Image (cartoon, rainbow, N blue to C red; front, side, top):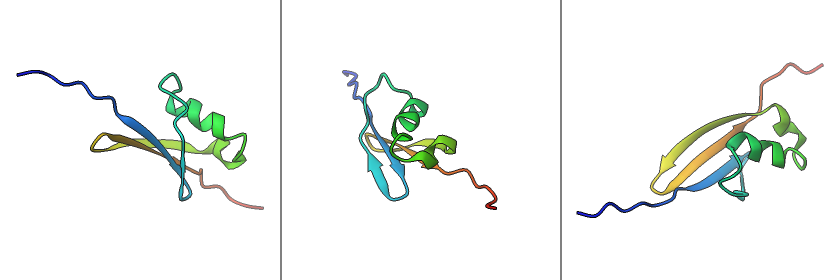
Length: 69
């Protein structure tokens, strides 16, 4: 019986959008920080996951709840 090694595909989700994984050298927090340049609200978001579905590891960026005003 041979053992087969498969690499999980990482998927990053935020507010209905899926972001491209910049590569395995980036931690999920690094990916959040990378995309926070385009989406400033990600600077305070937390990273949930991964939630594994088959060969996909899904991370979700969740905005921190805060009081306005």
